[in-house]
Image 1: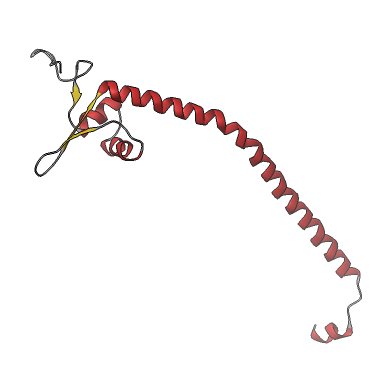
Image 2: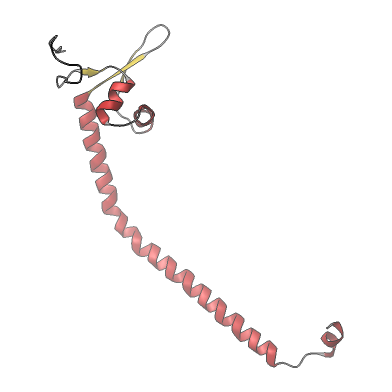
Length: 128
């Protein structure tokens, strides 16, 4: 792989210069280390591992990370395009719940007014 010249500061990298730690990967993506570790585990972010005796080390190529980010953005945009289809069902469900509450309220008011106009039976008069 191409190496940076001795006078090049570490923050300036060549296109295929590997990012050699979780910190470097996180800094490249402008995220926290825990976030990029979660992305690698759950979302398939391209991270490569060197296996050593006791501990392994990780590295990633910036070109692979850029391609992964682009594919992730495309998937998110496709998901946003599908979201408005669900909105009418949510609105319809909300209207149905409100209608149910309205019908329940009307029925209880009608029953309350019927009970108020009925004469009380003698059985209940002794209890009061």
